[in-house]
Image 1: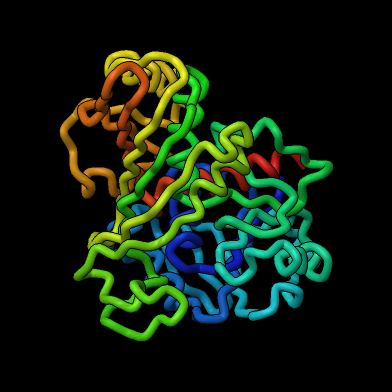
Image 2: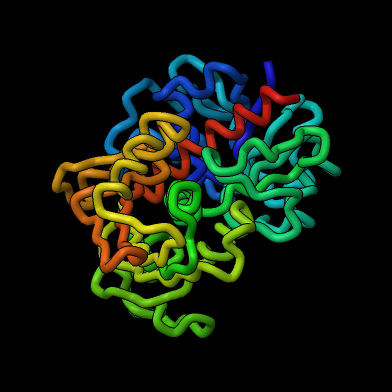
Length: 339
C-alpha cells in the first residue's frame, strides 16, 4: 500500500486529512505523517477535532508524544522547516501533499524528492515549473506517472472555473468570457487594517470589506484547457464570509444558447462524466448552504441568464476549502495508485 504524507497543516492540509478519513478516501493508502513546524501534537489534535467553519471532526482523535491518532490510525507529526530534511526515504513515503504555501515553485518542492526521498509531490496551489497542472474532471487523463513527478492541482477557483468552462466549451464553444469570483476571505488577509505594500487593498480588514483583488484563475484554467488561451479573463472580490464562494461567468458562445440548453448541459454533465465533481441545483440556496460541499463547482440553474443567442451568464458555487481539499485527497490517491 502506497504511503502518503502532508507538508503544511493549515486550512488546506487539515481539510484534506479530514475528508480523507471522513469519506474513507485514504482507505486505499497508508497515511503516515504530517509536517508543520508550527504545531505540537496537542495543537494538531485540537485544531483537527474542533473546526469553527466545518464543525467537529466526526471521528476519534488523540495526541501522543510524537503525533496524533485518528480513528485508531497513528500519524507521525514532524516539525522540519526545510523539506529536504524530512525523513521521507526512511518512512518510505511515496506521495507528499505540499500544502504549506511556501514551496509552490517546483524547484523548491523537488527537495521532497531529491533530498528527502519521496517519489511524487502534489502542490495545493498554482505553481511554477511544475511538470503538469491537473484539474480533476478536466484533464486528469493527461497525467503520466513516468513523466510527472511534481504536479500542481491549481487553486480552488480554478477547479470550479475550469469545470464550468469545460462543459460550456464542449457543448457550445467559448468565443470569449469574463469571470468574477466572490471569494470568502482567507488566512492570507488581515483581520484588521494593516500595511500590505504589494496589494494595497488587501491592507483592509477582511471581515468588514468587499476587497477587489486579482486571481490567477484564468491563467491556471488555460493551463488545463489550452484551447481557451486568450479567450478568458478573471478578477476576484474578497467578501466578508469565512467560507463558500461563487463565480459569475459572462460568456460569448460560438453556438446559439438558451437558458434551458445551458442548464440541461450542466445537468447531464453532473450526472455523467463529471459526477461527484460538478454539482447542479435548482434550489434557491445561499453561500452558507455550500459549506462542506465536496464538489469542485455547483451550477445554480436558477441564476442562469442569456441575452440574445450567444451571450450567457452562469453562476457556480464552491466551498473553496472542502471542495478543493477533497480533490486534493482524491488525486493524491490517484497518483499513489499509478505508482
